[in-house]
Length: 381
Ligand SMILES: NC(=O)c1ccc[n+]([C@@H]2O[C@H](COP(=O)([O-])OP(=O)(O)OC[C@H]3O[C@@H](n4cnc5c(N)ncnc54)[C@H](O)[C@@H]3O)[C@@H](O)[C@H]2O)c1
Image 1 (cartoon, rainbow, N blue to C red):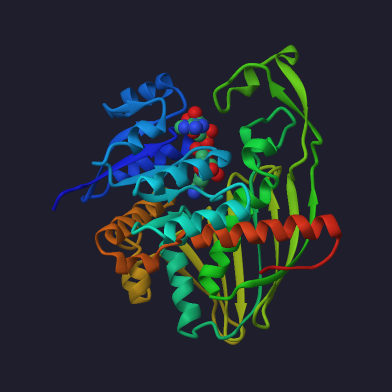
Image 2: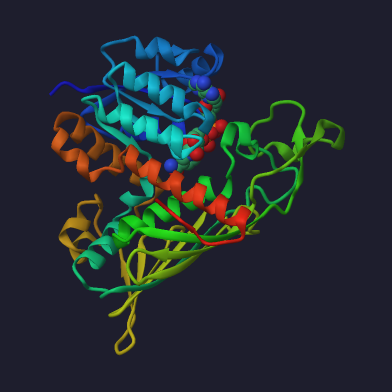
């Protein structure tokens, strides 16, 4: 079998995760990378041993031997790069959020559906074994009717007013930050697991640091502590550090979510609780190998990921036996395996979070922004 030839565009934090997990596939290979300058791309290429590098992604799209591209760049570039990649006939994985607005995302869905290509939004968290297990437990009726859901997505990497990143600038990251960056992962996961759709939201957002200190010179991630006060300039911040969102579902389920990027001590904690008419489920993304199952009239259980104890369909998301932890990087391995399988057999694309999933979450994000602005419930769709 010929290997699929893959290019990765954007070589920052998540670009590296993509390259490493494409390399764990037996039917695909990373043949080229691009960044915004030839120097950045070449440095990354030398570090990871990728000989072909480009300072302009369009050079790679012009190469008809490249089958698929992964877009791992800041949010504002997703739309033009995905559009160009679709126009070049490539299969595309695009990082989330799919675009800067639902209107842009809708255009990408239209373009993608007009082409004979496979497309996916990088909702990689769907590919944790215990997430697949929760989804099966809802689908088989094991948890009964979903009644109430709650949870949070909390991080502390933007805790100080000296913490800075492109995500804080709406012209690069988009008009929403905490909700679009991490809340959209939570909402996608919840809809994926429960099969229910969020019908309306009522949101309160907060920006605890209305002014942040932007470094005057580029710094490497986490190097901010080395700077002196004169190395910064003030920058007004309009995107949210925090959000509290009430959720109404299309069935009788109701729920609540908080998103927080200034939560001291929480590094990257996605917490999801689903309470059904038979039992409850709790999953914490920082302890992904454990799934709590709660019962009113019997013992509670802690299911430790073990393919031999899981629902058969969910067990295919685990490659290792019980007691051998699988984590964040493994979700990309599982995701890409299914994506490349779909590139060879289009009928498998239905199991992926297509661009429609990216559009869906931008609609939720826009409803959250509108709800906050109006202090009112806002319907989605
Ligand atoms: N699915 C996940 O778990 C996950 C995790 C982190 C980030 N992300 C998403 O991935 C994207 C990138 O985030 P990151 O944290 O890796 O950012 P980053 O800042 O670490 O890396 C972005 C890279 O893109 C490059 N770049 C910028 N403009 C470019 C252009 N026009 N052409 C080519 N390269 C360009 C930058 O130079 C940099 O190397 C974001 O959309 C983010 O939301 C997803």
